[in-house]
Image (cartoon, rainbow, N blue to C red; front, side, top):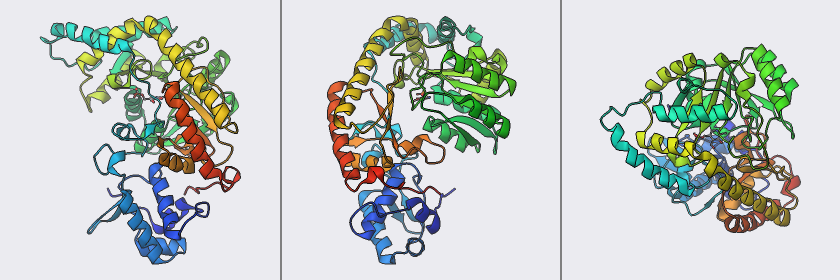
Length: 484
Ligand SMILES: Cc1ncc(COP(=O)(O)O)c(C=O)c1O
């Protein structure tokens, strides 16, 4: 199905163009480019006819013609005879494949781009990963006589995940684990199993953008419950559950992405009580749980929830390496069987070598983690110090774990900063990507996955970019993008 946007819809998305200088056509082009970069105008969307957009914006048709020309010249639009003008990304942002297929900040634009990627929060692999692959290859001959298909996951990996969860205070049997291709995969299996068009899914606001995209793709509607500066608003969660009867809830109590918040034991108990009372199926995303930098983590949220209504999803991606593409779902044995049946419709299991390597790595996690955490702590502190020096008006709580700072920029300039930062060699994810309704234009998520010698110059570049967007008083200006 071809996505289209009408003239009035695009005009509403563009909103006020007065904050950027230059000729009218350049301002229109810049606004559309920002919408594409921010993922609010999906790739391959057919843009309105020039006449329609001109009428909706109250500009001349020549202005729109010139704006589309500029977008085409920069690779942000492609025209094909008979199918109009569609949004696109330049080849350098799509790793060589014109067009691309998802939000502009997705990982496939990271490799091969000459921009420093601060849009993603994914650390490089520790040395143990290479060694684990060597060990996995040594074990591989034992597996070659078999079929290589393990729908639920390799037994040794299911056991390693179960052991880790048990050690963290959530008693788990290997039969309660389904190995997946990452936490996001596990979450989408749950969505596929339990949600249908029109169902509501309770989410924290802000939340993890790919989860929001997945909810939308399944025809479900995200019901946002705002986090406070300090944590979870239990009354708001209870009210949202009572008023909207969500089909499920998706929560990140452990170094929540993007805020970095860690739910206290009392918050977990209270969240558990609300969700248990309402019999709401809850997905607990523990992707970042092992990255505690400043102290212990309370017991898993699942310990406060009924086993038959809870799916805990986890991942090797941040603790170890995203390239393993290994995650898992943990639930009751019956629910795991149903999730595996859903998975079988899509694929038949994960790669054996990666599972062997991950089992090896999970077994040695207690030896690997201290150095990983120490390194991240150094990176986090370096980023906090650089921001304090170069961008002292920005505010961010220092998170006790995870991979990111959730910065308050002091004004609604996040999307503009994303565009300006590119000219300074930095790729960012704008705050609105993390909100249900385009909120968080004042916010920017900054990862501290890079070392200090990269983060320092990056903050210098950010400071220059920030200066260009605030030169006209933008940090105190009106919101720049009305979202239709
Ligand atoms: C909270 C959260 N959930 C899920 C994911 C996806 O992880 P995976 O690579 O395991 O699919 C991420 C990755 O950034 C994340 O931050």
